[in-house]
Image 1 (cartoon, chains in turn cyan, yellow):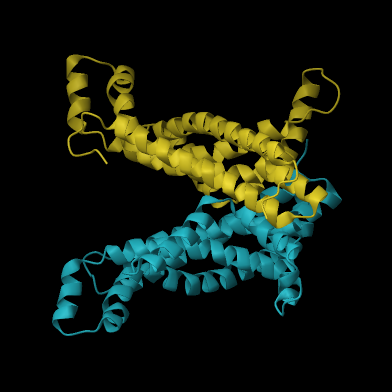
Image 2 (cartoon, rainbow over the protein chains, first blue to last red):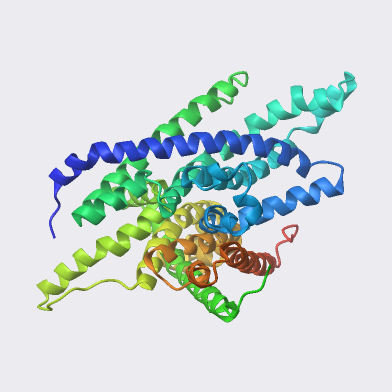
Length: 232
Length: 231
């Protein structure tokens, strides 16, 4: 049992290229996830029971099942249907890269929608009443008061969600993608040095998490800069 | 669509393994979390540092990576240890033991924060009163802090347990025959991956729903006698 530092140095560039894919997967799926979360979050607080139940079912499914099952459902599951295999989307959905993005985006979309719903419900009533008193329409009220306030309230929780997504992105390695974890597993299959390589990969994950946590705190301070006495 | 082609009982067996794994993780992880919280609040600087490092590292690394490193990394360590004790040959953790170890370490890291918050939430006056009667610190912890801890910590622990139940799917990657692995096994024979992964998803949702009801009842019981805290 010895620790081979030379091995870590030798394979570090390849681990970094894996980390590149990890960051890319997170960036794309979090952007798509936000595009899903905003309408779903609005549906969750809508007056229509149909919209509410529909969004509730989506959130319940994606928050109640393991991400691994969701990835397998997209990557392996969809090919079961002739209609999917013959559709124009098939060139995308047969690639693990796009399947991972679809699964991650649907997953984070559900979690982010719940964060957004909670944040929207936490907007002080007085602010909404004041906006109404000015004669704002519902659309304007959402655009100018509720959504901007909700973003500030929900931001710390969203930071946690992004951290969870970084950790979840390791599951991309189960559908053959060479993200940071996938790359580490490939190198280990060649070198039989699980401790060294996994430790190095773990350190890179910690670095990514550290940088993102800092960035989120910076943005939080900037979003709340008008609250001078509360910003830290 | 939900013709399970005779694999239904296999899936149920897998679900049973999933529940067993999750409960084991809950037990071991709770102990780790309690120890972590006590270390974080202790006067000893090394204990605090160890606990801070533990939670920072375990919460920043993917669960999958931790499962893999425990399973593949431990055999080298265990074999070396066995050799030192005069035992020849290869020693490794079973997938179940590796899964419980890895997921408990993760659960414990998050539970540390939950317990730390709960310990701090207990009114200082009660601790002072207990000390004034002459209880030593150990007795204060056992008789005053610990019995009340559950009430405050239960919602947080419940959420962690729900997350941990879903994380058990990761142990399928190292070959434990739990729900996800059974579903994958069935798709290999039937060429109906959507059907089986959806069936597994429904079973996971069932486990989650039952747990949520259980947690609700447990929270109600834990806060009995507390006016205004029933919910």
